[in-house]
Length: 170
Image: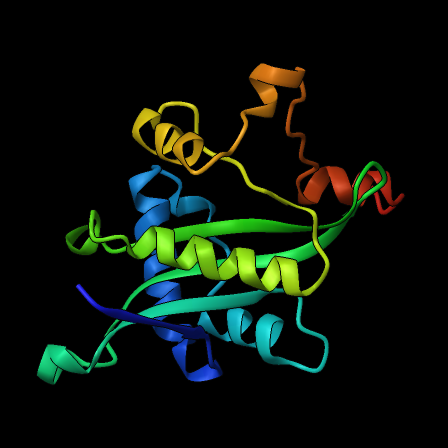
């Protein structure tokens, strides 16, 4: 199946938000999604974007479904004190009926091109432990599980902890 991968536009935010909700529901995390398409639009397409996003859409041979969004890759840039510039893949998603056609790999490949063009030397991302099929797929692409290999754990300070740490005492 042929698809076109392109940078997301502000007008895509409603569709991307729908896919964000789908993946959250799949992971039983729908109640943790606190953003909506307006926040997504403001954070990605305002004066100082926090993220970038690529979308996969059906190509012209799909007739009346041409342009229908079928996947996305949302990412941002960071910095490693060990290696320098990095890209962090926050989310990669392909609608279930379009999986197995190479669309996820095409999105990953395009993110890798963006990373290399910006001088990044590695891509970081997290995968839920129970999704062995996806873990195997990432390993097949050359990814290394740093939890297993290096003993690193991904940590997070939520909103309350962040406010407490900043001295705002929530």
